Image 1 (spheres, rainbow, N blue to C red):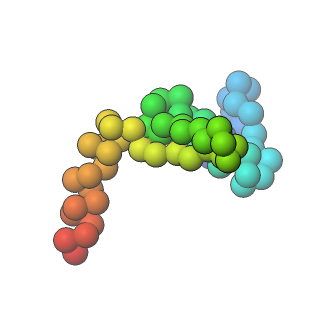
Image 2: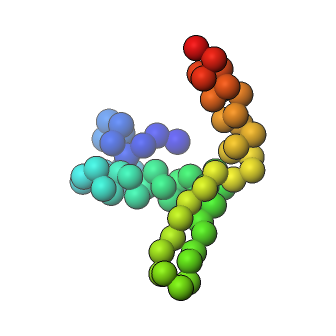
Length: 70
């Protein structure tokens, strides 16, 4: 799947991104949809936080270890 900002305009089904905020929201929604991120709601403070899912942590952990070894 290509990001809307990188779309060259040939595909009529893609919606162009108007600004960086919309692009960030689109990326966040894609990560949530594909279950790379988990949403945690704090109903007392009315805030939300995001964390990597278990699968995302397992996937990114080897890359982080390689990077930290440099």
